[in-house]
Length: 322
Image 1 (tube, rainbow, N blue to C red):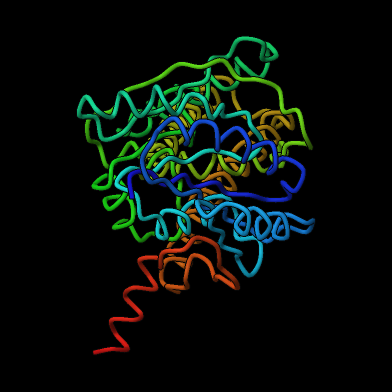
Image 2: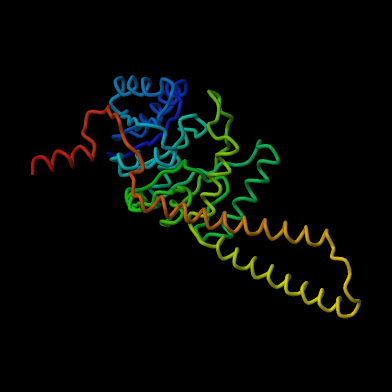
């Protein structure tokens, strides 16, 4: 198998036919054996039905249906584990990742790269969103050592050894952008201009984006804990200085009525810092709690399509024969 295309899907019933038509044209130009893996991440519409139909109509299409919505990270992992290609592409189902870009990305892979990343430009984005994105990526790169580029998402092509490296990372709290950067290997970038979603609505609400951003900040470093230590030391030094000032002022000018405003500000400020520190500690503690459970990342309720057995099916048949 030359190429596997992994596509996580959540409520993409209307987008799948157009996606299949666009991919079929690109894969026909490749001229080598390819497969498309549609991962239904617990959709509530007819995504699974459409995936079955496409798998029946096109032997290159296979599908996995997860038992519930486990999230995009789990869906991508499920597709990577089931992919058989020497090269594996990851892309979204909403056509905001243009399939025709795959030809350029595969050509760059021939030069010896293990990763080719499609980097979306910010042209046409609202000014506030673009500014916040740049600020976030600067903070992420300042706190971590993985080097995530602004605009570089999940749309990429990986070599087999890069895929195997990602699959060897068995952590439960997954942040794919960071994992792809952490494994290293030679990486090339292909710029492209993002297009508005033409079918359906984005599944990423503001709350989900904020949570995803926090995942990225705490998944690859413990610097927020170190920053808490530094901030605590700074507050302690300032409190000591203020205490010395109050003592000297009292000795010089005598005792006066205590300042209500100063006391209120100090209590509120220190209380906020305490809650912030507890939140940072709780975030890391919660991740440790999840990791220790060792639950599977996802459960598959159904799979089908394609004529050749998957890697997992081959292993199962060999174990039965043995």
